[in-house]
Image (tube, rainbow, N blue to C red; front, side):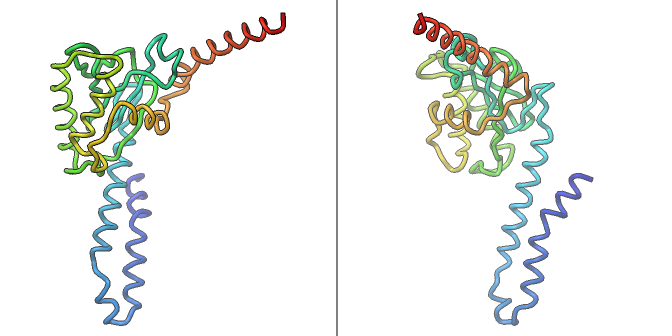
Length: 220
């Protein structure tokens, strides 16, 4: 029923365009190409796919189709909460993450379950479709099984960036650890209230302690 309502609502612009076209004089109507309708259908299909993928997100089973996922790293994320561990999911939601030297984890994310996710749009993959997405994730994972983990230069963010570059997401090959760190901070959504607390509570507690100590010293 939800999908039926979504399709009905999404298709009303096409019906309106057809009605408007029927009111025009014949010569004008013939000049309006049906590519407009085709483009509208493509947009509707994209919206439907995004809607379906979003419904398949399940934090209880750690399934995040077409998502980049993030979880805090103990101590490091307590000090710098925008830095954490990142992975990328397949079309079925299985997490792949560069967890250590010569090791890419599958369905067992290092440092625990994700606390944030950033859902991407599979329609923005250059070749299009879930096969291109999964192939890029698989190829990037196979490549990073042969690499040494380097916290500063070649890490989990780099693994995700390679997958996006291979699939040419948004027709770009300039994804890197820096822009992924910033964009995931902006676009990432917490999986739950517990995820929010796990992400921010240690940092806020540490900040409170530092401020309390600083104020105490200044008041003495």
